[in-house]
Image 1 (cartoon, rainbow, N blue to C red):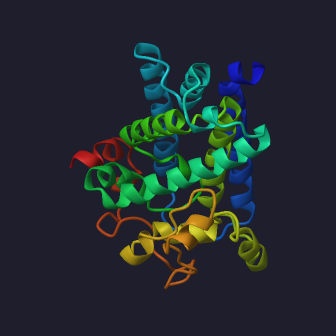
Image 2: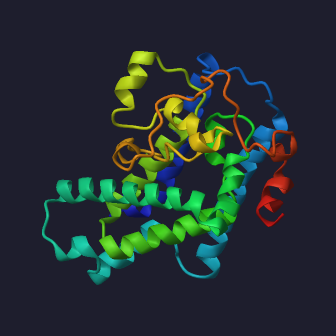
Length: 267
């Protein structure tokens, strides 16, 4: 049970370790030259994460413990959910939990593009004018809350173990930072890795200003879902070095600003 009590610290250590590692790697081996990089943009992406963390802490202390891990603890005690009704070996249960949770996040991501209300908030993520590991941090607080509620619903339905939920959160955050990074992978290595996981070259296409590319390659972790559901694009039409990133109507400096990003869904 010690890992449950320390789950916040474990996830925080994993988050910063992966973030700092990728920051170094994408600086040493960049895939694209940044043409519109600015300190304002970087600070906005980072501050959005800090602000989102503050909002989640506020909700947890002022209302109820609403994190997915807290929900998993409660569901496990109550014996609710699919896995609490089955007698599966722990390793198998964890593996199935990770796959089903990842599928559900893929579904949430697709919905965020096609449900107008969800897109209003998700487009803050897509309005980033560059693509690097800090793009993975760029989400509107309301989208973070919606995502949290969706994970809680999943936990109540599936009843995954607390360890599985903690592991999933770490993997999801780590994979999101990896596939948003500006890291240049050797072509052969990219082809091998993307058989299983979404790579930076694969997910970058999802941030293209071209709609038919924007609405593909939704996977944050497993690349399987895009291939299975026909949302996979192999390469961008203009190539990775020439493709344009962001939203077509917002190719200026406005998305780099924090207040603009927070107000954007309501404009």
